[in-house]
Image (tube, rainbow, N blue to C red):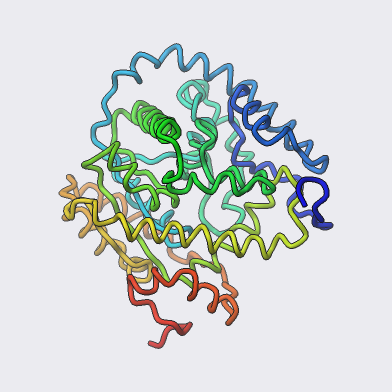
Length: 387
C-alpha cells in the first residue's frame, strides 16, 4: 500500500528536533522539492514545514544579494588548487580525517554554517550571523561525541541537497519516496543533464568556500563520494583522494546507531511500522552500492594521487600516517602543519567511541551483503577479530 494506507509507527521520536538537513534551502527550491513529493507532510511534522519555510525566506533574500555580488567572479574563477577528497563509508573515520586534513593552514573544509546556508554564507559571515546564533547549537553531534558548531567540518552533501536536490539524503525526509533517490548515490542511471546539474552544484560550493578562505585547497568529505570517483575525476583529473576503511561490522552497526537519530530528525512522513527493518535493509543496499562502485573505480585515480589507510591503524598514530599522506601527495609546509595539528590531537585525548551492538544476525547480514569490503582488505569473518 502507498501513502496514508500504509501502517505507520505509533511512537514518534525526536519530534521537535530542529536538526533538519534541508534547513537553509531557498524558497523556490523548497517549493520544488515539496512539489516533487506531492506536498505530503504528515501533520505530526507541520512545525518542521514551518521551520524550513521560515528559514527559507532570509536564505533566499541573502542568496539573491550574494549572487548579484559574486556571480561574475564565480563564473570565471578556476578551482586551483583542486580539492582533496576523503572517501569512505559512514562511520569509518571520515570525519576524523576531514578534521585533520582540513586544519592544515594551507587547507580549509566545508563548515556546518556553509553547508546549512550554501547560497548565502558569504553574506551571512559579513553580517556575523554565525557569531550571533552559534550559542543555539549543541556542543556535540546528536549521535556521537564529535564536537559540533558553526565552524566545525561538515559534509558537503548537506549543502548539495539544497543546491540541486539530486541526493539520496532527501530519501530520509520522504521515506515513502526513497526508491526514486537511490540513483543519486552513483549517478550511473541518471541523465547527462542530472550529472551536469550535480557537477555545477559541487563546483559552485567549492568556489565559494575558496572565496571565503582566500583560495585555500578545500578538503571535501561526503561518504557518497566514494561511489562517484568517475564523476569527480571528470571534474578534477588531478584531485587527491584519501580512502579510509574500517571493520565492516563496526561500520554497519555504527551507521544504524547514527540513523536511529538522524532519520527521526529529518522525517516529513511518518515511517512505516516496520521502519527498523527497512532501515537495516536500506543501509545494507546503500553500503553495497558504495563499496562496489569504490572498488570498481579506485584504479582510475593516478597512484600518486591516492592513499588508503585503515581506521584501526590511524587512530593513535595520526602523525605517522599524515606524514605519509603529505609525502605521497607532495603537499607543502609539513613542519607548519605538524606544529598546529599536534595541539589539536592533544585535545582529542579521552574521546569515547559509542558502544556498538554487534550480534550474530547482524554479522551474517553484513558478511553476506558487504563481502566485497571484507575481501578487499582481509577483514575476518569472526568478530571481534582474533588478536
